Image (cartoon, rainbow, N blue to C red; front, side):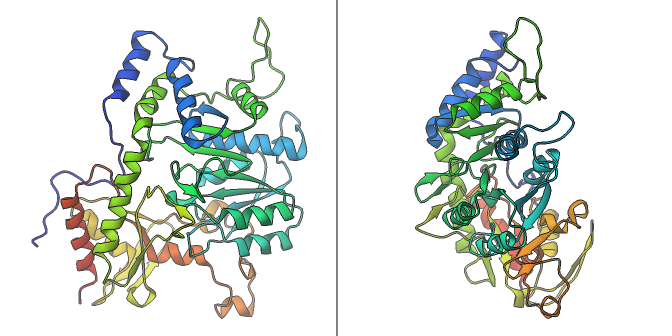
Length: 423
């Protein structure tokens, strides 16, 4: 197969539009409901609740806003309302998935928490229950865990929940990437004490922006609605008795989400087909796809990712913003594959750089299955304290998973990747 750069770029993940999105946006325009109230918002909240199987949803401006409201609720329940100039988690530690986007972590920092990062396990690339148990041994006072379902694959929720219940801790479920994925038959976004999903432009259902808080507790939903509209009291004038936020979803954005919702299952099927074509195309290469536990969970396959076997890795060094590698016959590395894809006008992406490696969080505690990942001990130096997240980051990459990509385009991309392994 002769390989030539694509004339039109193949992206990592773009939205697929169906037409209803424009119709509902136009209705908002024609009816002059352009603010944070309107029929689109009402319908989106209803549709999301029905699909997920929860009692209440609150449409917000982003997944991050949804997580912030979840964090604020959890902090208030655990520690009570703080002073006006303090967050609900001021002076408290919170456990958080290490391999994730910064938006998972930042809301807890907004509320004053010190984050303790929990290492990743290899079966799902999510929070390691063994590392979480170690973390409770080191920090028994912690009462809040923020859990991520990475790239649309559910975490080992029952194991994590059992550990949290033993230690009296609440769970915030970051399902931003996993809407439509199921764990033991139950939708992600309904598992945690507080849950959030995202409708960002690259998610499996998009509004160009937007997010959703999900709950079975009416009181929690009512609080989030109030906080997200600047905490206005029920008075004839603007009365404020607590801090509020401008976090509600626009009725225009809600029109896009409303038009997308009926196609969620179709989008998941397309994403799954992309994952399986990669799996088949790479079956004889020294690689593995991002894993999940069959029979226990069904991902939404939001992003298809690849992990290169250690013996097939060429030498690669990553700095804070740049990477270097040395080509070796029969071997490759994420940097080489991503650079090669870019030459053919194809977008890939490195795996999320673990939060404990980020400059802003480099001094925060980090716990592995063996104990403190920051401890400089003989066992650590000898490799006895495995940093799973760092290893996946070093050897992994996100493959183009665009729902608009054709099977023929994906065949070319598979061939491009295969050539990186040639002798």
